[in-house]
Image (cartoon, rainbow, N blue to C red; front, side, top):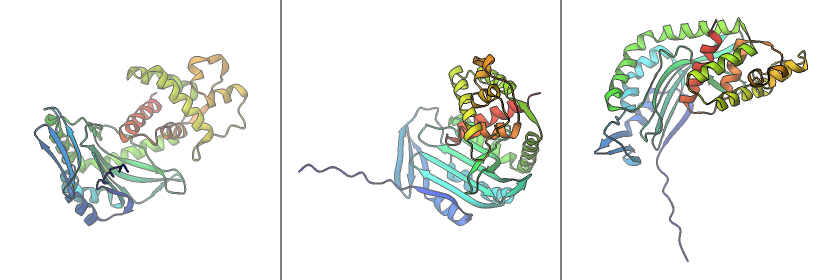
Length: 302
């Protein structure tokens, strides 16, 4: 009888939204090792290899455990964390901390700091800080990164990885200014409206300037229309809309492709922001950050 070999489960760390514990974080980070050995990047956890990949001479190792451990006390002072998440799985490393809830204009927000890296060459290094918004009673949180100039995204080139770490650490004292600035931007969105037709055209222009394929832009606008109707937290009241207005709300791409079949409506910018970013809620952090940045910039244009 033929026997099938059983793959051994690789060790990992998966801690999501746990009560904050400095000691638990440090203990788990001590078990992580990411080293370059000739042309190989080898990731080990508790002494066992969990990822091994061949790289070019240009690839640089980001010392994930060292960076988080060395800056942890500063993170704690600035964020005053209530919960944390830590994931070390194969070639992916993620760490985030969340502060206690803040209520602003009947909305719940939480400060966060997030470090995302990979030792498998698949993902860039991202270090980001900003507010998360709680969108439903079960505690679901979505990022609302606003001032992208504070955040860092970098490929793992050996010439830049070290300087990226130093650059972010040097800016930590200004983190509170980042949070204050972002909250002002969020409040500004809540206090102003935008024409849906105007938004569709500006989003299209932004995408084309970023060399985004037009079919992706159209797809995102169609998805936005579905969120306007189906979002559990930010769906629009459509009872007072006429047929042409409803056509535009359910499919904003028609403002670009079939303008005679739609009529413009005005929507609170904060709802547009939330429905648009909800499209990307299950994407990776790099995609979420890019689209947050895009929609913030579009909504803030005069």
